[in-house]
Length: 346
Image (cartoon, rainbow, N blue to C red; front, top):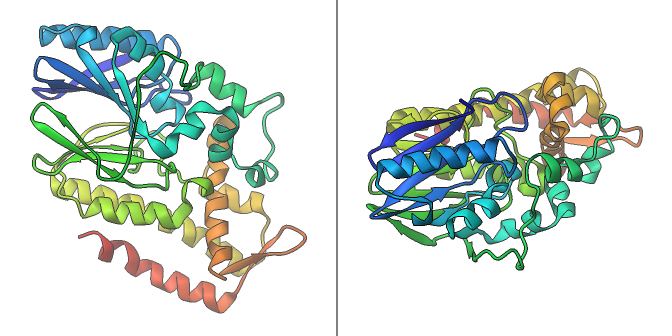
């Protein structure tokens, strides 16, 4: 079965794809709201993923003596195409309104903005895209055939920091946590400890953590992780892979995610302290070639690190394209990395 329905709580079901590789749907969640229900995130907008997801949702609703038209809201954590691609067809099938981050509208409604946020021009100039590969057409054809528009016949509602949505026993509050995506929201009920964390946390079998420069880059991503780690969460529903239970399990995953980011920083700086290096050499330190071949925008993470280092005076880029460190500054930064992760999430 392509989509597996996994009960999380009596009023909460996770729909998780068994597809490996890209493109694959995010986790979608169905939450009971009394005699009605909402969906959190929407998965891909293409079959068989979309059709299989809808069928699985129908079966879950039947278990609650409900039907598709009882889904009144689709709540998006962010508007990357694996989370938002199915929003329009699911909204049309159910009559649901779509709540999305205000900062995510541009990339969900404009192909140029999708590419700008996923694969910035300065990254595209550094890599070799597969012959004939068009990033905008790829997203349109294989993940999100229909862009968001005011004329789509959908009720759109913008959301952001501090907004609240009551869903059954839950009062979900929006926490703006950019870095993975410019408008990324975590929806959390602090009383129950249940949260929908989107793509902030590392997930086995994915390219996460992923944080392009135009979504806030490394600094804002780490700041979001620090903020997330301070929330009292015990049932963490991520955008990919399994649900995580327990406060300590959750905080350990936050620390592990931060450690992955810091490890990438360490690899880049240690390499540069040996000798100046071009982008391609540093890019290979962050993601394996097989990942970069499938999702060329993986290289945006490397650029996010290099921009951070340049802005901080840790490295500079020579006219020949090679990156060179300020050795003393780079060594001090490396020495500080070991103290960063453990101290900021406890």
